[in-house]
Image (cartoon, rainbow, N blue to C red; front, side):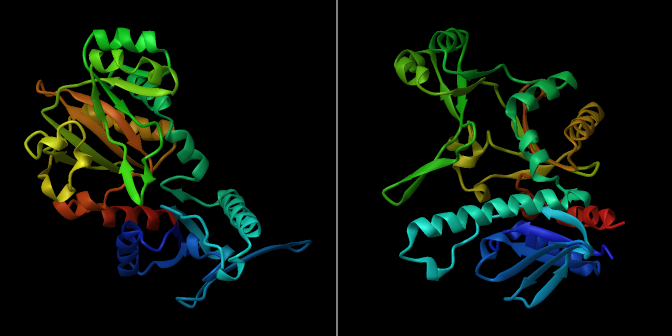
Length: 329
């Protein structure tokens, strides 16, 4: 009987914890797979014989068990790489193989569970939905305003773009790097023609992600859950100076937030976007210009939302729990 929500995440994921709490209130059965504990706190068994398949999960810490036949929906959140058991210490090469094999098996498991519903989506769909060029193309096709965007290492082209006005540079995927036991995060930064002139060799030696700088009245994080939206205004231009280009540079508690209603055209465009990407959830980021226009930046199909829920009491966690329950049938 497919009556259980399988939550694939890590043990530090507070977003998953918030949704699970609401699922428990609804009386929905949940099994949480913290993937870092796959080899250290779980037993996973998949047997295939002439009689059929048997999938079993056992969480030894919580003493909970799950039969594969009971999985009604998979909530794919933030899985972490499995940790290698301590008895592999001192055998680095073997430990590396064990870690790689476990990561690959998890990918097999996700594909194997492709016959049940996923929320927000299955990993392959999430990978496709994360492609920024595809996001920009789709948003533009649906009538959303998008900033001029460039990817590449053409220093001459970048110089020509910068000569037309300021740009911003963003990371394609990496969030930062660690050096001397300190993590240095990558944030959106303003780029001028003078900056480009001083960095032509560096620009030609890497793939750059640049967009035209857009003036802001404020920013929006719109959380889309199965046709229901929660639009939070981020007052980034009236808070700390460091937040004006990238509000993530400051403690999110230092900013003000408020809920607002979106234009109906934008609601329809977001619904069409999620349908085209085959996702039931999307964390949309928009700039609202001084003229009141909405400029699409991106949609993270597995983006964070808990801080918005806590600051605005929007009700995102119960909405996600309800979406999962609906998928149980």
